[in-house]
Length: 408
Ligand SMILES: C[S@@+](CC[C@H](N)C(=O)[O-])C[C@H]1O[C@@H](n2cnc3c(N)ncnc32)[C@H](O)[C@@H]1O
Image (tube, rainbow, N blue to C red; front, side):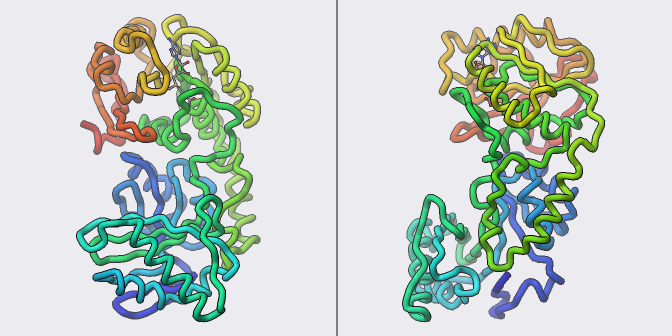
């Protein structure tokens, strides 16, 4: 697509990079390296890790593939204009100059997400408003009518990014956030974000070569993400096939179908001979988990138990345990510290040397009551909550975490 302003020149990235262009994949705190690895495995070039984002280059096929199969991306954005602006008027003028009619249809709807930093543009909302004014004024001037704003379900999601006087405009190719996988039929009170769940499995270094067990599985997000990885099911396999790029003028249905077919052909391509187990004390939430598993047709791959974590042994043999216990925020527990203490005792007494244990929590006080020293504490974000992903090496010589760079 379209126009990039480079050192004052307007260029078409397609001609400068042989149909390859720059993209930005957005993700969560501490998942950047994991996402960069996923993108490299898909053939992304010039991969650069940023803050909650990864920049890379590739063609439209890679844009389709990244949307369909990346487990740890929230959105794939395509930059299409870069320029300098030193005040509101310059921002307006530069945006007005962009040939928007080549990007949006006049009867389409759009919205602008904005982030600003630096001293020139201190209100991201205001910068977005100026940008919107310039777009609609250009349409009015040339066509006598303008596209409308829709913040709920727009045809085009634009991203305005300003750092000091450097402005980048990007098109969101994903539409709805990629954490919305489409498999949730029911949830408990505090389900974990799907992208975070997949990211935690990857941070824990799961290679689908051991059993997996979540002793407090709730509605089963961790179990489903694990089962999808074990079966090589693309991350968006259950989504209703709606991505923002499908509304773009340059959308190529044939290429999209061919990428999707290639990815779908990988399903079942590894011999996963291990077991995936889930356990929860709440019968109703286990019923939701069953519904989700049946919807994904992964119910035969996952074994569920109802009961307290202390009463359930993990599977026999090498097992990765990743769990998301209550933090006392949404799920109230009478004595959270005591519960974390019992959890630590269970790890020590019931989980053998074959177990590799990880836990995510936002309760830093309760965390101390586990009574085990974590060998890694990776900062992660679960919704608005600042969390830590803790690794417990129960025995000397147990597995080391691969992505330790952010660990405290
Ligand atoms: C934060 S939720 C887990 C959410 C889950 N990751 C999901 O995506 O749906 C914590 C879960 O721990 C369960 N739980 C609380 N106490 C428990 C116990 N003693 N044994 C097993 N599960 C327990 C709750 O029922 C709840 O489903």
